[in-house]
Image 1 (spheres, rainbow, N blue to C red):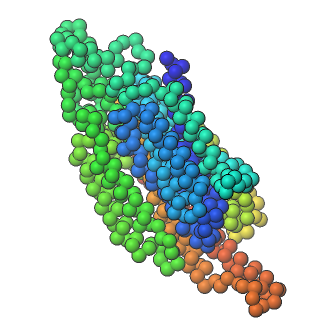
Image 2 (tube, rainbow, N blue to C red; image 1 turned 60 degrees about the horizontal axis):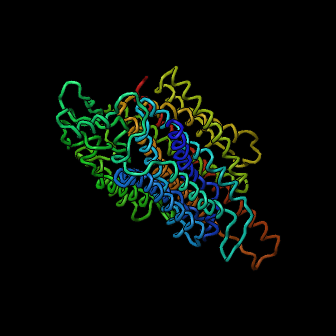
Amino acid sequence: MRRARRVVLGTGGAVVLLAALDAYVVVTVLIDIAEDVGIPLNHLERATPIVTGFLLGYVAAMPLLGQLSDRYGRRPLIHACLAAFALGSVLTALAAGEVMVVAGRAVQGVAGGALLPITMALIGDLWEERERPIALGAVGAAQELGSALGPLYGGLLAGIPGAVVAGVELGGWHAIFWINVPLAALAALAIHFTVPPGTPSTRPSTRPSTRPSAREDATSLDADPAAAGTPGAPATPPAAAGTPGVPATAPATAGTPGVPATAPATVAGRAVTGRVDGRVDGRMDVVGGALLALALGLLVVGLYNPDPATAVLPPWGPPVIAAGVLVAVAFVWWEIRSPVRLLDLTTTRKGPLLATLGVSFLAGAALLVTMVFVQLAAQTLLGKEALAASLVLARFLAALTVAALLGGLLARRLGDRVVAVAGMALAAGGYWLMSRWPLDLAGSGLVMDRDLVVAGLGLGLVIAPVSSAVLRVSTAAQHGVASAAVVVARMMGMLIGIAAVSAWGFYRFQSLTARLDTPLPFGVDPETYQRRLADYTAAVQAALHTEYTEMFLVTAFICAAGAAVAVLMPRR
C-alpha cells in the first residue's frame, strides 16, 4: 500500500510540476510571442496580460475547483483540468493575435491552478496526519521546482527550429505549448491507473493504520446505532478544526481548497450537521470564490494601461481599482461571517498567520518582477537570444534554490522570524544593487552576476521559514489549508506585483521616449541616416535602462517592506 501511495504522490507531483512550469515558462519567450502576435517592442505593456492572464486564472480557480473535486471525485476533476490545460495550450500555440494568446493562457491558468489543491486534497485522503507533512512537502517542492526550471525549460524548447506543417507553426516558442498536449495525455493515463476512483466519501480508506480510523469508527457507529455510547464501542475523536462537540471524520487537512471532510460524522448513528472544516453539509463557498476572483480581476484590469504614454493608470483605472478594493473587503466580510468558507482558519492565531502570508505575498511580487524584467533586460540591453537570456536569469534561480535549502537549516537553529527578516533584508540589498546597474551592462564584468546572486539568496532564504511558520501557527488539522494559503498568497503577490510594477515601468519608458522621432531613410544621405539611427537606438537603450533600474529600486522597497512585516512572524 505504501508503494501505491508513493506512485500516486509521484504522479500528482508531476502534474503539479507541469502546471508550475507553464506559470513561468512564458517569461523567456515574451518578446518572441509579442513580435509574432503583432505587439511592437516599444509597447510591451500590451504583453502584460499574457503573464497576468495565466496568474489570474491560476489563483481564481484554486479554491472552487478544488472543492468541486469533493463532490465529483479527484480523478475526474484532474482529467478535466488536464484536458482544459491541453486545450489552453493549443489555443496559445495557434494564436495569431494578442486576444487569442491571452485567452489561451487564461484557460491554462484556470486548469493549472486547480491541479495543486486537488493534489493536496488527494494527499489528505490517502495519508495519515503524522505522515502528511512529508507528502505535502514533496508537492510543494514540485511547485517550487517549476519556478526554478520554468524559464530554462522555455528557453530550451524555444530553440527548436521552426517547422510549418499544414500551415501550422510547430517550432520556436510554439513548441513550448504544443508539447503540453502529449504531456497532458501521458499525465491523464498515469492518473487513471494510479489515483483511486470515486469521491472521498465513497472511496474506501487506503491509509495504513493498526487501529480503526476515524472514518471506520463513524461507519461502525452508523451501521449499529445501539453501539453508540455502549462500553467497548469505538469512540469518535473530537473535532480538530470544526465546531466544539462536532466530531471529525478524518484527520485530513480539511478546509484546504479541495480537501474534504470525507463523510458526515455520526453520534448514536445519526449524522451530525453543521460546520465541519469550513463547510456545511458538503456545500461549496461559491460566493467567496466569486468575490475573490472578481476582486483580483478588477485590480488587474485597473492596473493594466494599454497606453501608458500620459499616465501610469488608464482613465478607468482609479474607479476600477476602488471597486476591486471594495469587493476584497466584501470577500473578507463574507469569509468572517459565512458558515461555509474557502480558507477556514478559525482556531489559528491571526496576527502571526497574516504576517507570514504577507511576507509570502511580497516575496512573490519580487520574484516575478525579477523573472520577467531580468529576462527582458538580457534580451534588450545585452541583445541575447531567449535561451542565452534565460541563462543570465539562471544565476538568480540557482541562488534561489541553494538558499531555499540553506534557509531551512538556518531556521532550525535561529528561528523562522530571524531568517525571514534577514532574507528579505538581503533581497532588498540585492535589488538596490541591481537598481545601480551601469548602462553598459555588457562591460560591467561580474557586477550583474553578483547582484542577481545576492537577490536570489535573499528571496530563497524566505521560502522555508514562511512554510514552517504557517504550519506552526495552525493546528495539525489545518496544515493543509495553511500550506495552500501560503501558495495562494505568493501567487497573488505575483499577480498584483507584476501588474503594479510593470504599470509604473512602462509609463516611465513611454515618458522617456515620447519626444523621440524614429529616423527614416528618406530624404537624407545614408551616412546621416545611420548616425540618426544610432542616436535613436542609444536613446531607446537609455530609456530601457532607466525603466528596468527604477523597477528594481521599487522591488527593493517591496523587499524592505517584507523584512518589516517578517518581524511580526512567530519567533520559533
